[in-house]
Image (cartoon, rainbow over all chains, first blue to last red; front, top):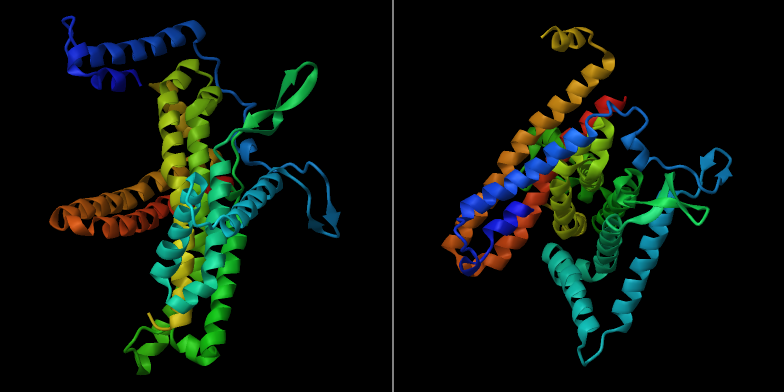
Length: 316
Length: 85
């Protein structure tokens, strides 16, 4: 961070005999010097065997709830899902209620959100008729995933492995966790999308005509059989690609932030490493919040509307 | 030198899995890395050729970026599967 500040100073303040290059080098030197000093003071504690990074993503049941062999325990992910649901429903109701003639700040944001989900995502990839029909679904998906992702970057007191002692009461430590960093939630969303758009295609075209519409235009006769087999596989690969894309993006982002913001230093037992990796953690955090969280929600909703558009229009 | 070589000789299953994760995720990053660079390069090229198409191009750019970038994470996830199973 010091290097960036040094290079961005305006020319007027640069004076006092130091060139930009020298300042950059001094900043870099101080940065590395602190790392060396930290290493000299604290040294290496040896490998930490107690700290298990995967515990950050472990779901311990908070309230046991079992019906037969089905585990419905209330845990961290369920709490995050509930908050996300409340936020999503709240936004949808707000959008529905707040459509007024006279614009104000809220109205501008609401209209921006509506414009993005309706004009850009739904209408850009579906026919007018299908867009009107499936826009609520696509918009709900977008907001649900977006809120879920963004909630993952706000520290909430949900870490039940570590506790902070405040006035004799053990509070759970603050932790970053996202419901979408667990494969089951993207998978359920993907399966919903998959079965809905297949049903939409079959309802609109009839089973045989819908299956025929999977074939690219102009393919007939003997070549149709292997190409149809490939198309069937590609339809089912969509389940994996759609769910894993969302899940792995969020999981990898959280892992990077975890390791860079201190996990690596704790794991290896060298304090100086924590100092060196901290700027990377800040950079990744900004990257994840500013781009990836919104982009993944956008991609999920866009691909969903592409699939619905394909199923309702037929052909490729 | 012997300190370094001795642990390598005692190959464990965990060590092999860690190598699989490292190589798998690392090599899997090469292709998507080239792809992402290609996308942004082409976007710059197209915007300089037709600046009036900028908005349309940027919306397609993010779609292409996210689809390509996801391949990195497929490698990463399958590496994790190899590591933990």
